[in-house]
Length: 255
Length: 115
Image: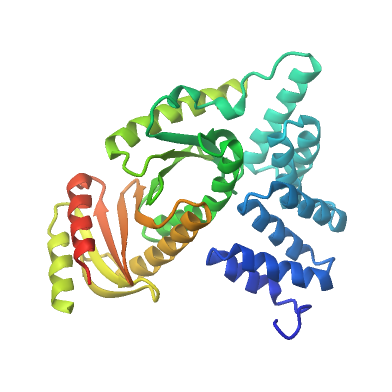
């Protein structure tokens, strides 16, 4: 790879960097290789995922657009752009991409739900009615508690549907959601391998925060971020309250 | 050193509801000392736990959340707790009904005492 930047082996190398959390190195590998192989679809898909995980949604969407020029029916690119436009408050473009994604994979529940949401928002806009609720304010009732740092709802690929963080807002939630996706997948893989039944939660205690990830139905996960010293009992209760708010939001947006 | 580790995992494995306590090499993902009940595959537990912990630690760093502390995975039939201690990992597999508060307290003590 070092001798030949055009080597097709750049994708496994970039993936290996990504698995180790070395996103900048993985991005450099992809960029260097894609200069020589600009039509390498898998490379652009991977670069889009890397940008998503580093919080650079604009660049991620650029990569997905390139993918669609090369391969107009690429599911991941339609899905990523659909969520991107939904997040940006552009339900028309969101619906266009999510419809195509839903045609390509009708069994994907997260796409189906996001498509319903995009259609509802578009209809609300067309009727000049306000969108039912601000997705970034879903967990507002919990924000008065000093230990609560934020919460958001995320799909299986780490794309945020609703919620935000007190510090950094919705943008930081999007970044954290993307970054946590792989950790959650590893945790679920471990639970399955060890035959521990269905996963019920993953709790990460870090220097700056406590992060509780819990399943929310079959297709979504709830991420609650709290102070690093938040007691377990408080966290459990707050997660339960956040789950109720998230379910209410999802139910409101399905009606 | 291995006697100390063996005593530590033995102490943890005696807590009611604990099905396995293991100290592992974090980088290699292999057990150093283990005390596990029948049916708990120590090497597999450690390999999966080490991989998850590496992933979580990288995520924490990338997200600006600082150093990784304990990781707890809850499932329908039990829990897995992973605590990093330098080059080592302490991994505990517990049943659903285990006293998590007591277990976490004791696990933290053991992890802090690891060399």
